[in-house]
Structure formats: C-alpha cells, structure tokens
Amino acid sequence: MLTRPDRVLPTRPAAVPPPADPGAVCAAVLAVLLPYRRTLDTAGGDGPEAFPEQHRQLMGPVAAGEPIVFTLPGFPCKSPNPAKVLGPLPDEGERLALRFLDALCARIEAVHPPGARVVICSDGHVFSDLIHVPDAAVDAYGDALRALIRTEGLTRLDVFDLRAVYGPGLSYDARRALVDERYAPTLEALRARTRGHEPTRRLYQGITRFLFEDTAAFAGTRSALQRDCRRRAYGVMRRSHAWGELVARHHPDAVRLSIHPQPRGSAKFGIRLLAAPDVWLTPWHSCVLELPDGRRELRHRAEAERLGRVVLRDGRPSHFVAAG
Image (cartoon, rainbow, N blue to C red; front, side):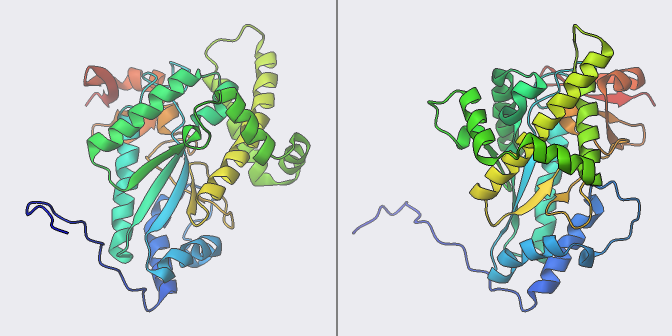
C-alpha cells in the first residue's frame, strides 16, 4: 500500500527496560513524595522504609518498567461560602496545585524514566447534594479545570469524574444512588469505626468543621446547624469511601494519593498541594495570598482581603497580593 510522502506514520515509544533494583527505585520515588506528605503525625524524619504499603503499590509498575499512575480524589468544586473563596471557578489555587502535580511527575521521571501520571478523580458530583452545591456548578468547575490543564500544557494530568462512570441517560441523583448502593459502608459500621479508630475520628471532626464553615446561610440555630453538619459529615465519609472503592475498580494498579492527612500505614498517601497554615486547607476551600517575600499560601478569602489586594486574570479574580 502506498502512503502519502508527507504523512508521518506513528511510531511506538522506545521500551524502557525494567530496573536492575526495583526496590531502590521505589524508595527513590517515595523520597520524591515525602517532602510533600500531608499528615497529622507530630514525629518527623520518616524515610521511605516507613511506608511499606506505598512501596508495594509502586513495585508493580516500577518492576515492569511502566509509567506510575497515581489517583488523587479531589478538586470537586469551590466552597459555597463566599467568605472562603473568590468564586465558583478554578483560580490561582487550582493553577498552582495542578502545576505542582505535573512538576512532581516530572521529578519522579528523573528517578523512574518511564515517568508518572496523576489521574485527578474529581468528586464534586459524588458530594454535591451533601455540600449544597448545584450539579451545574460542579460541571462548570470540572469543565474549567480541564480547560486549565490544556491551557497550561500539563500533559501528565488527567481528570476522571462521575460523568465518566455512568452513561448520560442517568440523572446525577441516580448516579449517586448507584455509588451508595454498590460501594458505601453502612452508617452503623462507619459510626463504630469513628468511635474506635482515632484517625477516622479526626477525619470526621475535620469534615464536620468544614461543613459548618462552608454553610453560608442556615435558618436554624447554631446548635441545629452543628447537628446537621455532623449528620452530613457521615454522609460525606460514606460517599468518600464509596468513591475510593469505585476509583480503585477503574484504576486497579494505581498508587493512591489523598488530599486529606493520612497516618503511617494507611493505604493512601496524603499529599500537600500548596503551603497553608492549616493542614486541612485546599485550593477549593480557600484562595491564594502572595506574601511580600514571594511565598504563596492558601488563606480564607476574608483573611486574604484584609491583608492584600485582589489580582485579576482574564477578567476574573485570581488571587491576592499582600501589601509590602
């Protein structure tokens, strides 16, 4: 068969031979990740040997000489509380966080030549009814997130969300019901684990606090809101577990990252996307404040407004710059 002379036929990338010492490569990858570990542990100085579960997850692709795939649930939508964020769409916080993840993959490629990718498992539709954000706002955030990845040329990142799981014929309520039915633990089991497992109890308290802070308007009393947030926190935790199980089914060989603090021995590795005075802060619960020395931190909007002036990007508020 003749081909056009100007047509370039695709070629397969050159295979990378498996390393002679896969364990050493796994340790080197963990050494790249460790400075950005997100944890509530007070003791520091952990080396790669303190994370045997992550070592095990890394061993498969490393020993095979294949790219490492990380899954990271997060980037759901912006907080509905205008005192915390600049608006409903991604801004400088997401931009910096996405750049960080892409650059982290590039650093891993230096010790594991097949490279690495991060699949952002955007979970806004999983929780939208519990966090009181319309599904249309979640769609707009997710579409803008994908556009930002393309515009920034972040070729090591992908986005996976509930739209990719179930067909377009189902409503989001129906999709959430399927996730609940197939993957969520019972409320009774989750309550028991929260009572008897300290990391789970702290996660429950953190989510309850977030829901309380994210509520911009509530008709009842403060105590009624606290009870409502405690109830919704269990719902968020059930869905979070369910989403994690679903993601594991779709990406069975991936290394599991988390935006939540994770203790040693967890199946997930907590990852810190940006500097923040609060270990629980994320780009979608806050905004960026650029300090006089050039450092950039996540702060709630109300605090950032007191400290600096807003900066626009493409006609929209992007972040704040503190007064020198």
